[in-house]
Length: 128
Image 1 (cartoon, helix red, strand yellow):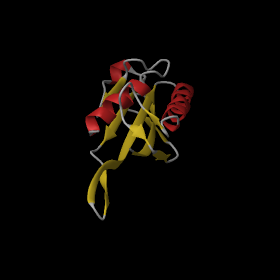
Image 2 (cartoon, rainbow, N blue to C red; image 1 turned 90 degrees about the vertical axis):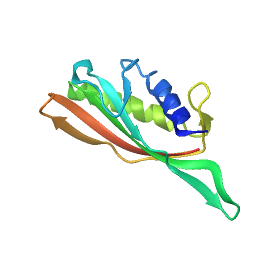
Image 3 (cartoon, rainbow, N blue to C red; image 1 turned 180 degrees about the vertical axis):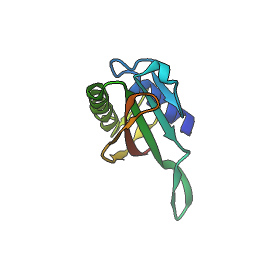
Image 4 (spheres, rainbow, N blue to C red; image 1 turned 135 degrees about the horizontal axis):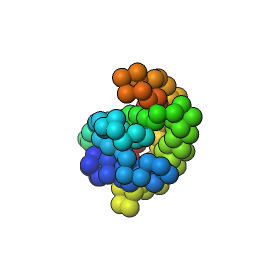
């Protein structure tokens, strides 16, 4: 399973959140389409044992949930957390990876004056 399969599955899952359908982007998004979710991820780190590297891996990623109203940002953050914790011990997306384990950090919240929007940032690590 490669990282692109994971990211495609992640987009499919997060796009199922009401109000965010078609509003999940890698890296950045236009402030004209608020609300939205932006994710950043990497290839992660492949697991290794005495026989060498395995197909399984640890992949950290970051979710940025952006909304113009604070209450909307809070609601989307809660829905996003519910969605990501549902990943554990199942296949995500239609044919994405099986997520063995997942951890996340408490969301950090901020207001971005330049775009007049609230942002919630969640750091997540999945193991697949």
